Image (cartoon, rainbow, N blue to C red; front, side):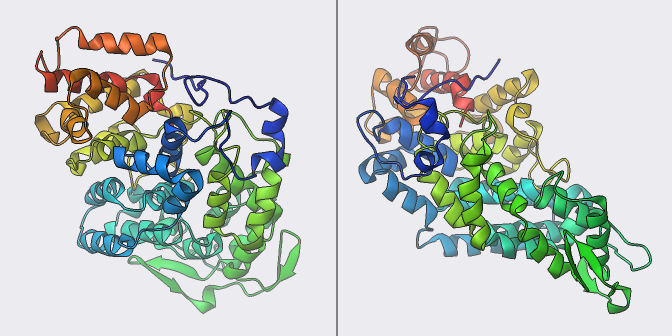
Length: 471
């Protein structure tokens, strides 16, 4: 099944804006204000929650409609009062975990239950960005500390995050950079730092890599702990990205953050995560955000500017990302307001290509269209079916009919409409919608002819629509 990202907000209608407006940074990054052509409605509320969270439940959608866009964004950006207590409780259980596989389950549970979903969404982004993997680290403690550290900085300071990453045993072991001697310089971390974490390719030379690697000499990971051995540090002068001095690793972090290419690369990557992955943004669109970001590397400020913008709420951003497997699975569970076995879910998400705590390479998951092929689309359909079946490894936890009735939709017709509004904000072409409604006419397969079973079958049909796989 091909997934096409061609819909515009509001039943496929244009928002009345010109191509020139979309490429104008002053308009693009100005704060979105609803108007007659671009109203604040269920469609845009759903779009916000798919990007800044893992989708929304019905109460969240209705509250967003009442609050308006900017207040809704405020709530997503700022953690509720109970977030700290929630995270402490989750950390306590994770700290007692002895395997990386168990950590995967706890993280999915956290994604489903968190009162601050944007924090988990951004932690997932940075997890892929830095690419540390349990397959190399082979120590649940190291991977737990790594992801907890990412979470602590996910909406904070990228400068502080990068400094922590430079001394993170899980990252160093994953890169094969766990030993860096003066007489045997290891270039692996310096290369990843410049190419993957900050500058991007073509913005450094091989000499920069060699010199930066010398600055990091003296650091070793031994028995899962970071150690600095002064006699193994090369204290001679180095020339890195045009600067000279007796640099240490901390100096290298400072120097790469001073390069304009770093902020531009990170803004482009966040653009693809939060705005669109279907086309490369022009430099004039990226530059204003990059210049602002480079001033203090405040991630929250950057994310806020993107989420509040005209561009974020425009047709250029709508359904322009393919959901990763975690977004797909967690979005179903959160919307249906129930917890499922996340041990099983972690394995099913891994089978779809996203093995949490195990990014496949140092560059993380490729994502985008790589999430989708014949096998993974069949796998997503099977996972949705298993979640809805009412038996098996997920039990009877997710019940579309119970959720519909809870929110006042007790007839078959109103329940179907409720699910369309909940999961797709009823934003479907009329022919697709008509075909979908016909799935209720043949009581074969899952659920038989009983109302609850038929609504499960209808929900499964919704989850297999191409539109549902787009964020």
